[in-house]
Image 1 (cartoon, rainbow, N blue to C red):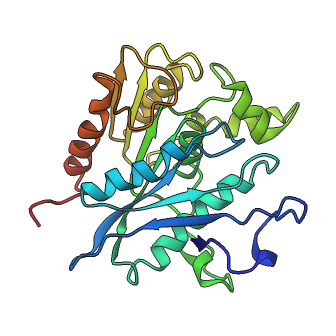
Image 2: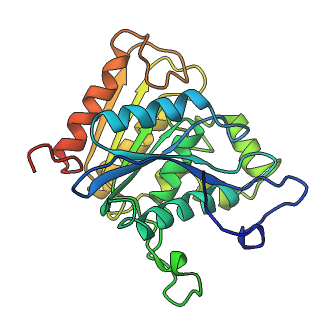
Length: 267
């Protein structure tokens, strides 16, 4: 376990009545060369973190030559901006220690499922270059991910919203301006990283329109993306190893990683 902040007093919005300390679980590969890395954000509607979308995913990434970390970010009763601050800090921390962990600092991506997909899309649209004057050297580092993988993600908090995630993240009657800003398709820019998305067309929990909205926003801004809509499959499939056809998403994603130069088998 790697804490995102060394001391409780340094954790922004820390609640002593709910003393959860956000942390990374490492799955670092040994290699003679710098490897790419993915930080995995499991889903869970911002009320919990689904474990089948954490370690198994990290082990799959390891199997294709990618070091990985599972992020245990804060969830309810914590609200925005705590999860986003955790996500940003995780990227900064991995990039800061990239030499120590034998990671290429220019190949650090994020992968999220459902509400974790929402969190991944937020850090991919709300990133910054770091605060160069901060006393904490980690905070001086950019938190921009180099790529995103969004798996049946929550994207919109307005139309096609997953109301449970919205309520857990923002509470009752949130500021409409904040809801708009945290609907990540509204915040896509030309600097949003390349993105791989997949969804099932009959997802009954998070409508497929969420992925479609994000893909259209990427297209509008000229950001490279790949989108796969599978005809059938329940929400929360994770690696989908037991679901015919949908389980191919991992192979498709591996090819995409290779196509954007994130993994380099011949180098």
